[in-house]
Image 1 (cartoon, rainbow, N blue to C red):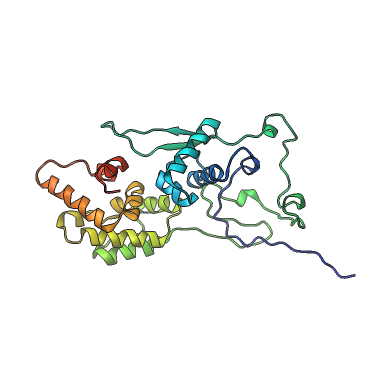
Image 2: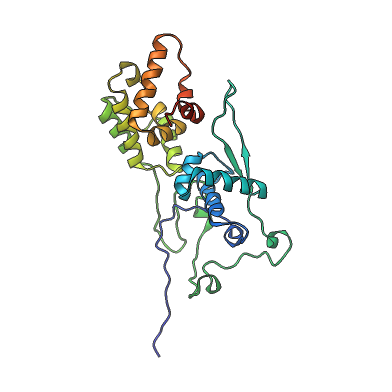
Length: 278
């Protein structure tokens, strides 16, 4: 008699996002609400807080910003997330912070048996269960960077390419920044945790080099601490080159007359919307 045993292998690279089964099994939530919650978990990583913009959420979920607003309101009313409005010192609003409170079903509150089902069970996947031996002490859940199975030596790395990013920046600017600088690596690592990749860094560096190349004043800002600051980076990546040139020309003119606004305000979503620069 032939052996018809089916072997199931998981070929994914383990740069993953963890969510509760209760979320996936919750029939009161629609697909958009579940996806928004999952994307928030992705940006939060091992923390309870995240601050993706509404535009970023809409991009990941694949819907309009109006839909994002409605579905976030629904998650807030259900108590699955909490929103904290932030203000700058001068009183204007900046990006919201979302606190992930968790999704709890009746089973977590004294309903049915709360014991977690086995991984990749037949009842869940309709196939033969594969036994995975995993030493959780070797799983870095804080950074999602490395996974090592107890019965093997293979590992997966999501280390940011610090040297490639800084080499490209130096090539475009003619400067000599160091890839090993602590603050530079911290900024790059934070952006990588938000799922930005090497191509995104190259786009921002190239775009801002073109925007600021004619201005001696702005060329000094072609540096990691400005380009790779998360709120700046998202703005640079998603704004058109034309709108950026208009914006910074205006700021330079105001600087020359001694009537300039704070640099940070030129990345404030409400200010950009007001001037049609978003």
